[in-house]
Image 1 (cartoon, helix red, strand yellow):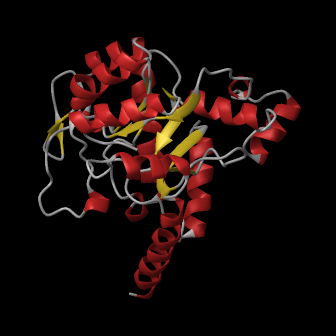
Image 2 (cartoon, rainbow, N blue to C red):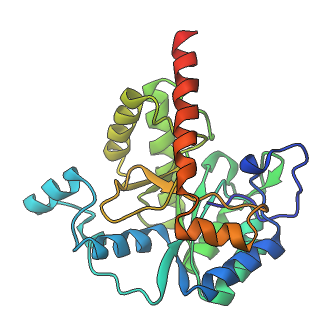
Length: 280
């Protein structure tokens, strides 16, 4: 999980919360991936590879039932995927311009691809900014799409969804998806949850999942820490955060699973936060 590829040192930001990765460090990390036999892929390709490793079993009960009835529009994504090397899904949130200027040339050099999630209110024909960082324009998005970069939704306005009404949440999901599809002329089915995913609020998470399915999404990546495994729920996928703090030992530890334990204190912190929020 990347955000900005830039040399901003983010003064005052604790290492865990840093979202900027210097271009030199990003290039090193992509080289480390290649050295370890990994190939950077889109989320769709990664899910196909997971389905293949799980003997082509759909990731969710809904998908299995739809496939039995023969009307599953995503059934083609649960097919054998013979990717060279070991697939590693590379994702970018927020649609920053530095993806095109700093990240894409490195990806191209290695023959890697990636999935970028767009908050569509900040993507326009004229240059806009989000969090004081320039974002991609629609012409740049289209150019990158034609070059093999996959795009998904990151809502319209990048809000904290738990603070919105359900009609507002549904509009954030549907309007962003519709805009990207209109601009690119192709169906998009991937979504990235903004801010921390509220797994500590199971009723919200369940209803949100239903809204995702009803809005036409087939996958959702979150900020939950971990590596996706065969049989993982494609609508609540964990990711490994990457930033300037990831030197080679830490980066390789994350790839090997030695960082997965952080998901436990992360979940406990969310439980406590949710309890205080409900009690206030």
